[in-house]
Image (cartoon, rainbow, N blue to C red; front, side, top):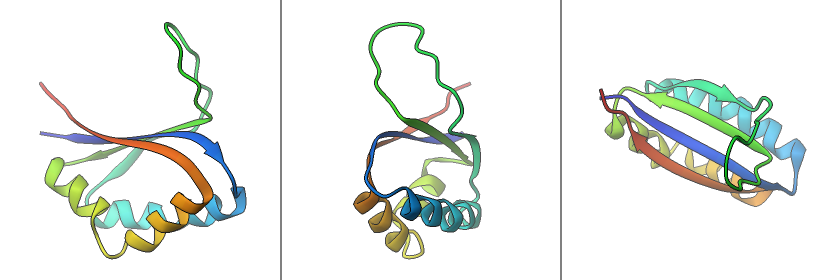
Length: 97
């Protein structure tokens, strides 16, 4: 069953570092069988309150692959870079059919 990693960027401290992060993360996600479905773009609030700067959605074959990416040694330095450069909420969502 597919799994999705959803990142909700709430604040940016270092935009240049995030450009570097995106470059490295594209390769890291692909190495773990993932692909990006959404990377930024205009977000339109339809209901409720949600104050976001940027949304990212990546699809993985399953939760194990998504967790494998998030907990991997190749992603660890990128994760540290992102955490220093931004305030981001990240969730893992399992797909259903």
